[in-house]
Length: 321
Image (cartoon, rainbow, N blue to C red):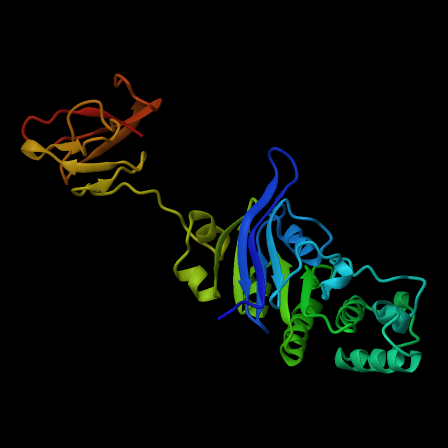
């Protein structure tokens, strides 16, 4: 199936040490995808690249089969709700919503469109209200109405619920999800709240340091995390470093190198792997004692662990930790 929105190898370099991408992401028509990640992971940059507020250094941006990489924001037909809403305080609600409709038709058409979109977000009759008279949730809906009024192809939401108190945020989240599904617009939204991402998103894209760690449904992220970061960032997790019982052809707990059983039941390294223990080895059964400084020749670590060797000819040996 051809994606409705495509980010293909998009890359933005801010400095020699700070960048976003290369990143590839696909959205189907009518799908809601959440960009989830910690602060500074590049979520808002991805939105701004798609909206046209930033220019990528590499890659392509495609919307509904049209390459919009070089198009100015006004021609991309992407509606955006900013984190702080960016409402004009000197304009009333109706004028804020109509701002993106200037030049789109007769004044009567604009007035009718404003009334329709305000009714859609539950603010019918609010046209002459001042922005300062509205609650946080109402301001959020005005910003959403302004983004929807020009009938965009894609809706971009930059943490639209972050300024609301917890009780109002939960109610507004449900209303927002219902509204987006009713309109049927393809939506990409940014959040660092896992509950928000899983509740609103059909799929969730986890970002970390400008890289896409994993894209999938909430259950997939929980049950089959693609990386240690996803496993620890999504939900709550206890991470246990490997050790335990040695097995043939296992992975070394500290070095990630392969380890297999050798002659006389002693452990030995698979050919080509760097030294894990300086001498001797271990069998499947082993005992561990306290940590102590490693005295192994050529050891790559400053600490080692003494393990009891159970095979004939095996010795006590300080192993790299």
